[in-house]
Length: 485
Image 1 (cartoon, helix red, strand yellow):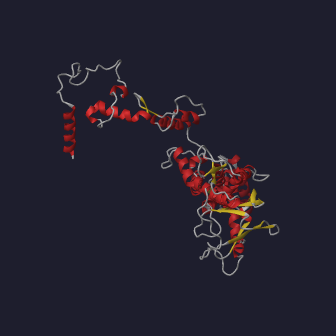
Image 2 (image 1 turned 90 degrees about the vertical axis):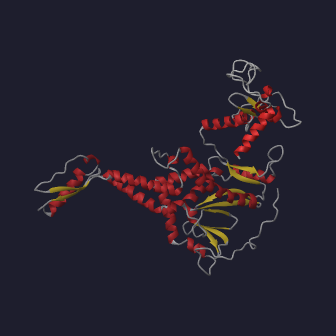
Image 3 (image 1 turned 90 degrees about the horizontal axis):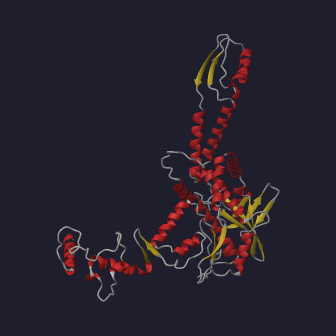
């Protein structure tokens, strides 16, 4: 397979419009924008949210693991006769790169880091190491230290990695694979789902800090104490005694004592239950924004209207979250590695799909396909790892009372017509077989008596049926059909 036309050059596709967020009259403005304290603060907050909020880390890790669960494989665009086409030397070298990505990481670890950076920071970067013009290794680059160098129109001319102001690396545009999520106004950098829900994440952190402090102090009620004419020294001593005797888990249930006529009034009761309800509400906001159903994070809530079954949530998770992220990664890899790196156009990379359905459901679907003739018996046996059997390549049609071969289905259908409407219903000049030879067996204990038919000598019905020839039956059916029009 060859391309119908050569790919356009960079000069031929140069744009006229301007990129959002890049100031005027300087070639390195994108680096200045990326190095601003505001962007660095946002990236630092996203990393802290991942490390501090377990719902963020659980959701991001789940997406990264699910995307790469089956691994990566090279697939031919079109299969030739006789099986998969033979690997070309370029495909062999590409598969070697997939087996050995770098001395420290394999391809699954590499792509898992890419998916994690995408969902957390909105951007992911891979360094390409080339030898003799072809990629020989891939490395992950820290997304928080990377800067895209571009002009006002967004034309990328390179990348810069600045770790701490001292360690700095420059990359050409072909040395880095930059993968980014969608941004509302475009730009050089993507916007992650975690960044979109920083507000509920911050509220969740304060909620959990409040719950922690409540439990640390033994969840005491908020009280108002009137010490009347106590001196300042007595008030201070009372405060210290209150912290020792009435705060903390060991002080739960201890009475609050006052002397000298002091009174205590409870302003509000304990609110840990309200805090836990707020925690659940914020949790749902976070995971819904990231795109993870509750059941995928082992959150099982009975009677939750609109939650759907586990299978429905799994399908929603794959369609709305996993497949878009996987396709985004594959598009970049196919372009930079196959097309640009190895000049391969008739193969592509794809993630191996894993069947997570219940085994009983899978077997029921196979049985329905076997009964309808969509599967042959040998194909079914091949899927479950069993050897083929003689005659198992012929598809069959199974009903409750009979089994038919699809190769004889036309004769089967004609025999039913002849049996029910007579020989006049057969097409002129056609060889009509004996209906009893192909018709399903009767439900009785033995063969049916030929005379046990309506109007014959052994008819089981009461009385004699009117005798009609088949031409009259056909004409009467036709008249009734025309009358209904």
